[in-house]
Length: 105
Length: 444
Image (cartoon, rainbow over all chains, first blue to last red; front, side, top):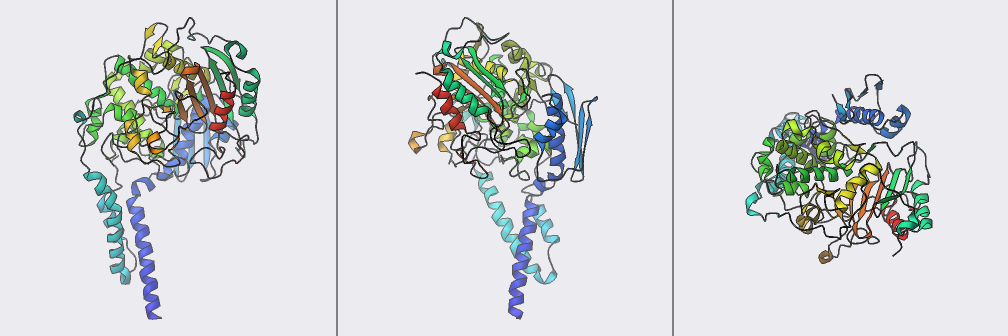
């Protein structure tokens, strides 16, 4: 019994250690991920609306992804800007000019 | 913005936050083992001797395009001349079958299955013979092109060379200060053009967003200054020795062009030297916050305008009697990246024959790798982008086909796309089937 517990502990320790090593090793990528969904949506929605000239419904269908839930989207149609909130991050993209389209703030 | 992926101190941090005390010894051993295993590839990559840029064979731009360049009496600068298919030797019925295939819908915008063509334009003998649009897009709409942008970005490099601002043999550090550091400075302009920078880069998209260098470049860690973000990566292998598809290489190239042109002339450069010259009036080219054009992904243009870009190449870089691209640029662009022949291929990369920011149809007979598009002539080349976007150019046939889609579920015969694919190739975008139908319309 004692030996089984010991093996269990060792195994568990290895799993935890490997998981932590994985997180540490990939921290630069993992730490920026929460910023991605809102940033992706803000930029692509802005360009879809103000460069391609599509409707809001078309653009929302275009950027839809079924992985991360979106907390909110604000469309500033007059100021030509889109703000998106997801995973505790907020990002805004705005239209610059006919030649240069949209850019993230 | 420095990459911390291989920072040893972060591994030490993991140990501090380690599990229960009774397991500390085991944990310490595991961490040490993991750190060793993870660090090994870094050591192998990091210690490889970099070949100095000037020791490698220099590219000499010379010679005509590797195909017969036709004499032109009409140019599509203002508008494409038009012709009926039968006037230029195309079979109208076969062409109708192609269009039926491209525009048949088997899904809706909720399931996003099946064929989702937005625009299709076919040019033969310098004349527009077919065009069709769907899903609300028109002949004037500038459409998102994703990686088709890279090929136009390659043209901008050629124009900088024509202006005497840049040489393809230059080490990039000469023009782009952030790349002027050990190892990275040995990358030459030609290495970036051939996606052979050797930089440590992970090119994945929405299927693996967390570990994607592309997603980080476009949307998070690298978005403010994409070229600088790419240049902050370390070499995985010496420059020029391995071909590896990289959107990073394309944007670093953009930074190099900016450095060579100078900030003042740079903003106008794509219009003054390319778009305005050839009549690409719909072109929109987005920049990052630093003001560098995102030539990996963000050109928007109409299908007709993309065909104008292809027409410039069919004419060996000459437009209405004016040589825009340097002599030899088209031949160079259509030469396979030498590193391709030394790179191990996977089912996902088997289909890509890299020229300079374009794709070729050559295969590698020495390794029994077939040409990617056996139904099309060997001189075929293409600009290709995510979600079914392509400009196919058939020089011997004097033909250009632009197809812009938004496909999220391809037919199963697109290599490297075995998951969630559509088994019936008549019901989703299949590059081979598209090309088969296109070739069936050509009377030979």
